[in-house]
Length: 288
Image (cartoon, rainbow, N blue to C red; front, top):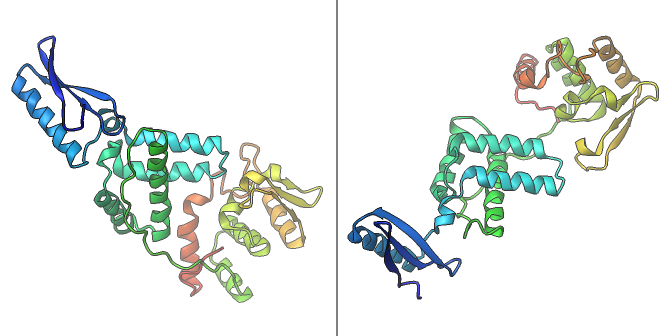
């Protein structure tokens, strides 16, 4: 049977069509959902035209949805023991908020471009953030093709421009000026980051099990280290002073070293940090 051929047949008063799937090379059967032969012939003609113009999408492929592809990439991260699962889940949710559980075949170049524009214009995120998210989407489709769920990856629009890497170095005078306008718990985060060179996200997720006050060191686990090798930080005097202050605020129901009345500091860090920088005359200054 060539791609241009096909047949109609009757099953329990409903007309069906059969044709060769150009992807699987197997016969594909599809109900016209009608008792009229003319409707079945019309559907068969439509499928022939789609196959001839190479716009055909198989019945199985039509059923693949966003959630199916999201499951594939989460499984892939788990099998390869990728440490950035938390970032992946966050990006998937941002994608899901726009695409919903749409069919994979409905994700087009134009739709991806609209997503880029929506994230920048409506959500105010950077080009770098959008690029990481569309990178996840692209990987989802690549896995779908590799596992035979999809026949092709849609053409992705060009990546958005990204700002150069942020500079997080502070002169001492700048450090003092910004610190003055931060609340005590955020001052501790800033002090620790300033004296260690750690990123703010690393500081705010530091737990007491990683702190050895008696041994005078901090041991960052491989799972949390960007190099996946782990790190040991000697607890020199300036860092010890910060941890001594945090020790006084330690709570048995909170594992984090840095918190505000038991609450994670990440939820208001950016707003308060930007306000402090503005008051210090250093608008736009970033911490690592």
